[in-house]
Length: 191
Ligand code: UDP
Image 1 (tube, helix red, strand yellow):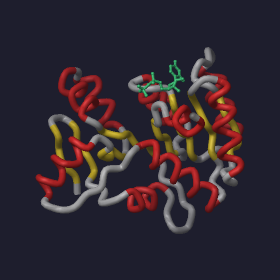
Image 2 (image 1 turned 90 degrees about the vertical axis):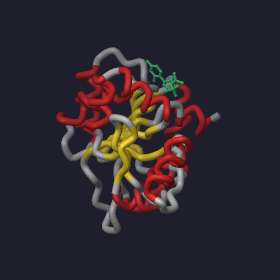
Image 3 (image 1 turned 180 degrees about the vertical axis):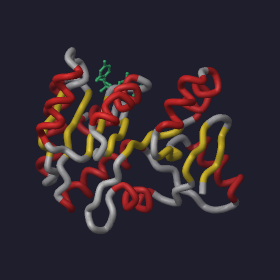
């Protein structure tokens, strides 16, 4: 099920676990595609700019992050739905990668924040096979490095809409991978 909020169709995930199991199933199989958190700011941006609406529509999963979006969906569907905070979803996804030994490549944030994020995840047994901070210059180099790493899950922490644009360009080049824009999550995780 899903609910259209203006030009944005948001998936009616009942809770975080349901979405996590959709991204990495019970056998550790990873969904190919991308997920975007939807909050009122993104809905408003999509209303104002068709290009943003198109970009959001292009993601394979849109989930309700902002509470305003969740409340509207509850009212329309008349069923309980939980808010899925992007930062928490990302952390739980990393633990699921650890559980099923799914290789992760981190993109984004400042170099020191990224290094701390990588260390902390590795302490949690998350198989981090590579990382590039969010201030790189050569996108082709990044692409080559991700390819070589064999990563399957790629969180991108560069803020919106920068991270979504990058994901759009990388996705066709890495068709088996799962991408997730995570905004300032690395800063929160290490802060
Ligand atoms: N960031 C990045 N590259 C950039 C700009 C920002 O990696 O060119 C990172 C920044 O270091 C931070 C994250 O993106 O870790 C989120 O930035 P911001 O707070 O500006 O975005 P928002 O969370 O508001 O979307």
